[in-house]
Length: 259
Image 1 (tube, rainbow, N blue to C red):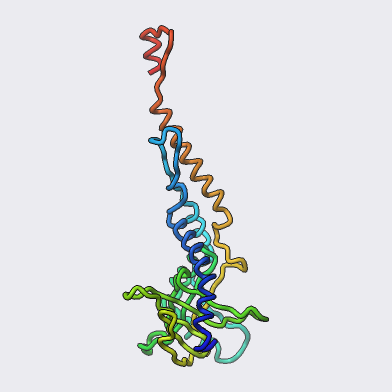
Image 2 (image 1 turned 120 degrees about the horizontal axis):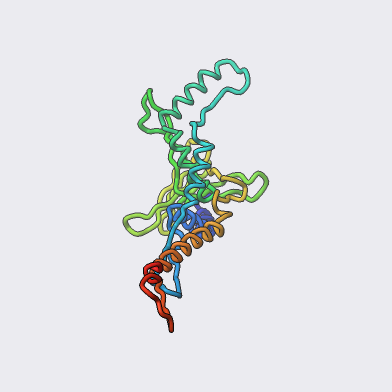
């Protein structure tokens, strides 16, 4: 990837990413409770149209996230190399300073919702001795992605994140293993080398198919919402029902019993 071909590569990647981003946003809105039952249309007695959201999607995500990431992830020594324990202890302290446990929860929430998530790691320009020399950030997967080589190993070629500017344009920040680019209006507006040695945007897929935790049961969740909504409609319609008697004589005792 060079200055000469990066715009074309970005355009091709965005074609795929926009489709993924739309699906991710649908799952994210579903997780927040904006589910199809809220657009329900009822043809018979439309004035009684309960729209009940049983947000099992949120419950599924919270359960899996709490089960796996209930305790902070920590690094431990592997092997018997001398002096490694102190370095691992220091690494854990750096992670604690960056509140990595909270960042891990953010990652988990995203990949359980939509099947993938992204973390960005950059040097801390304001590093102090009692803090961490790097910074962690969890990116919104609707506005970030990684491009991979389709050859052996499928190695990452570039990491991309983008924002909407005040000028109503899209600014892309792109990292390759050696160079940082900024692209705006299909033009490279910035190019500079970096010494990170790798792409600082790392993808964390939930599984090889990048399926979210509740994505495979969306139909069942919609059916549950519809069932509960119909049940509420039935109760409300029964309460508001009335009886009409034709060619019948109802005495006061029977009328009182009916009431």
